[in-house]
Image: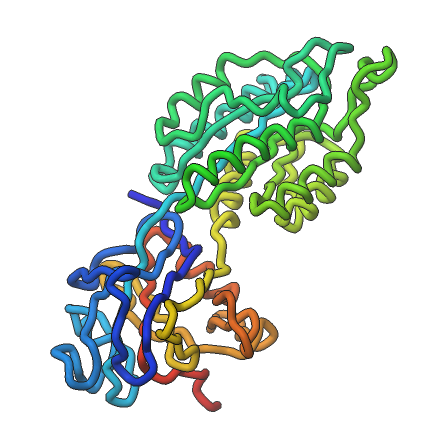
Length: 391
């Protein structure tokens, strides 16, 4: 089972009137409405409906009725039969930069901190929800105390490159022993170099870094001998630089008094670190990993330029959400003008700039809804955008 989430909507359409034409280079027909709902990123493609009021899919239920399974649709666009497009499932990749510094040998309930984290990672990676998530891992803190390198190139080669064979990640962790100090900035720079290169080679993938550490950036022995002197500010800058390059950094801190790691997470575009103390480490790390997997779901949806001579009417786009088994009918998520208008559990969607849209953004509740493995999302193009009902 893939783990479904939206990232990019590629329109390339001409919905200038109800039931406008489509660009066959950008879209390809499919049939039925029970597809989708699993994966990592959404790419608007896969026409699943009719082509307007005169097309074979026209009906009073509009775009939703063109999905091939009208019983699964509950949208009403006032007789307008636009076209539905399903999302293509792409891939989420998480590149772990793992701290194996000496403090990972600390006892936490009869096992080392590293062993507790490994146990949680094994549970996380064996979860069916992680099956389609590519995972890679690299390390820092593997040099002897007093011999730490602050050269990013030292950390740019993964121990295991991004793969769906998660057993390799577990074996890699199992082979590690806590050793050194904590050159976090260089580690982030190295991880960013790998993740950015991987993303460039796999442009349909959404790639994030997960920094797993049990301490703030420091290497007191190396620094005292005139060597590497890691600073928190350097790690913050490294995460910020990587985020500007398009790769966000999540931070999972395991141990006491790690509040400073929030600065790295914020700079890395992920708001705050996930912090776990020394109690019930495996359980709490697993919970944090599950939260990070959900949080990695990007809810900004890219809108690329339309093809020359084929403008996209942004007032004729609608978003519909349901479940793949039709237990929740395919229903519209209403357009709101901006994030401040997102209505709690009702959710919604909006353009980043209504006057010149470059992204579609999902309200928090809608983002959480489509993050579920059984969720499915469709875009209707060619019917007037639906605002929230008047109360």
